[in-house]
Image (cartoon, rainbow, N blue to C red):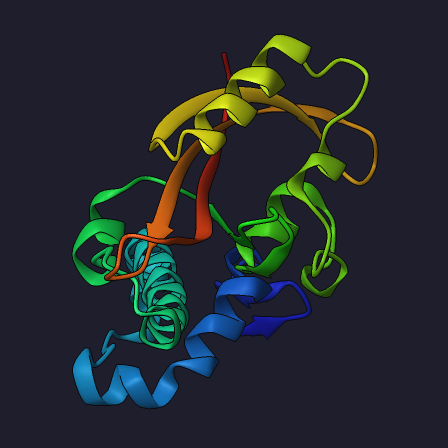
Length: 192
């Protein structure tokens, strides 16, 4: 049964939030071709966690497809299809070499509260605030200038002003000639 919050069982408990219903609908044709979802209606409780994981995997695969298009356009040497599935992240931010955001995935809105279209042309620094460590910001800048791949934890701010700790992994994206064209930030919220 569908409720305004997503798929629900017969007791009205929401099992699959609307976000995941949207993802499942969006990839319905892909699901039918590659991974048919067949389960008796009475087994939704049992399959809810499976469907949740599968929806996240489909979302991640969609993000990889978008990045593959960028890879083809800019001739990156970084193997997206091989590397990204191994990494643990919720948010992807792609910036140019001036650190202006060109693309973020849908996980960005979920983590920060900012709409995806709000980010284009801004730098990720707009997420930082008065409690963000200047020392951490300096380390991030230094590593970016040196074109190192690195991980760092930074204190960021959501749209509503709440503070959260974000673990970022920055991957410099170079073309086949070795020239840096973009930076890829893979982020997840951590709890100390």
